[in-house]
Length: 314
Image (tube, rainbow, N blue to C red; front, side, top):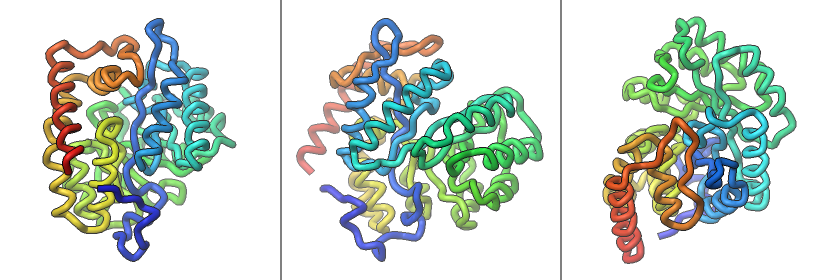
């Protein structure tokens, strides 16, 4: 089965599928050489392969990309490599991850991105600070004013320490330069309220929530697990956006062991283990990240091989 957005009439799609951040996006890993340097050749090949398998867009320098372990020059270099691959893939959209806890420094960093052909900027609450809701609103609106591309809010309280309330997110939805949200908030009621409100495109950020979020009206997903079994996940999202839940479920349910195993140890170590097994890059991570255990590596490979066989026969 192969479904491409370009082949579907617009009338077949739900309204949430028609915005700029709809569909399946991949939160990219950053490949490293054994000496710890960025492997730009591997990153370029990976981006081109994902584009060829039908993803809607790429997210560089996010948490999956170990952005916290990259200095400013390295982040710019990663963005350059991904943008170059995206251009070679026909202009695939790219979102840049941006984060920090110092408002002035983050605003200055956003200014340095001006002129880059970015579809959006993925921005979380400031880590460690744990501001009030009023402080969070000021953080996002100030940076939305400064951003050269539309903001995708990154609601991920287990990393930032800040829970963004429903009212806060609905307030932020009124800003003209805030367009979407990567939803890792873990609050189903909040997710549904944002979908019902309709001003933000809601993207599932927890891979196991992809089916439920899109089936209930979300716009798509930013999924780390889409590095593997990419075509199947693309098809699932497109089927859901067309409202074909039965066909999507047939493809979705066999993926659950993979989706669970991919986060059994801290991301992106499990994904890098599988990508290394496929020969796409090395398994190197930057400290304090650590390679997966041998047991999980064997489990991931076995699941991946089983899924590969089932995909070949469907």
